[in-house]
Image 1 (cartoon, rainbow, N blue to C red):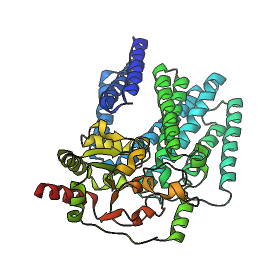
Image 2: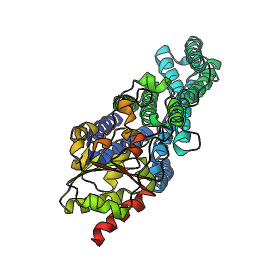
Image 3: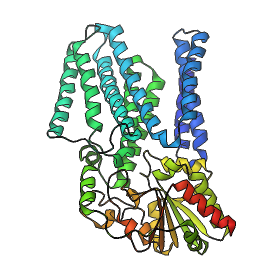
Image 4: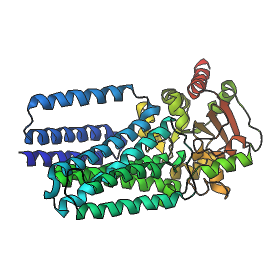
Length: 456
């Protein structure tokens, strides 16, 4: 019966993951995956002899905490929550591996010891790495890279230390408190911190995707330890999908994974931006002055960014888009793959506001036609619309594909100030001749534009 339940759960995971690939089916895919996990947990606990009283109590406590946390979290805090989810998965795998060592002792063979060790070290570095990512995303730790001399040597030393501890552990596995395993746990926890602190804020979507892959790989290894088929399948699915997503994020930035992990992106950008300073003079505009430009437009492209999430402006943006369409305007939403602070951040926000999926376009779809766009409205985006990425070889953004809003006939940028974005890189878009700056809270600014249309 348990084997059948695991097959059903695995099928639900696979189908659910497939449906997460499209906005129209994503919600159903999420529910199917959650149902698969429910089946897997019940089958595992009941197979271990747990009574239904304890099973239901566990669901009540864990489900209650999860429900309250999910209901209370703001969309701006979703990346941090995802980071904590990844870290929780990592520490769970570490504890499963450690507990298996404590209970198994010297009776474990190499076939069990190798995945046990992998679960421990991958789980450990995922846990502390996710905590650092959480700190950077929440502002508790500075978003800029933390770099120091000999950093790469320290990291290589930690990797060699973990490899050496692994050899010692496999060769001398006895003892409930094996010193080799304890050393590996300590090294992995330190390495998780060292692996994430040199990564700048602009690379956080890549880091989130990679840590998600790590948590899946750790869970897969833990499944081999305890002989749980469904944990192996689910962990492999999470690990594989996380690695694929990491690759997509890297391609969206035109950077290799090694460049993301070891380049310290952002420090050079801050220095370059400070050295360059403000080039030109920004041209402010009011909502009243922006209205006739939008009213006459036949094609408008919205470009959302993290500022839209901070202001919770997605519903006002949806309303403005609807008013423009009613005025005979073609409206699109250009979403850059790394906009926001986690993969799909802007897509989730727009879906929450019921923006039609058909209106969402990728940079490659909208850029060839950008010169014909009457108005590009940038809402809190910065690095993904920075023209220096195309032309300034000294910019750390150089080579990263962007949304070419500076080529539109008019570009209206909604920001609180002229400060650089999360990567700390100055943006010459603000000073282009066709750019107008609508400064202030994004939600208030968009609502003011909505009011102008309604009053007219």
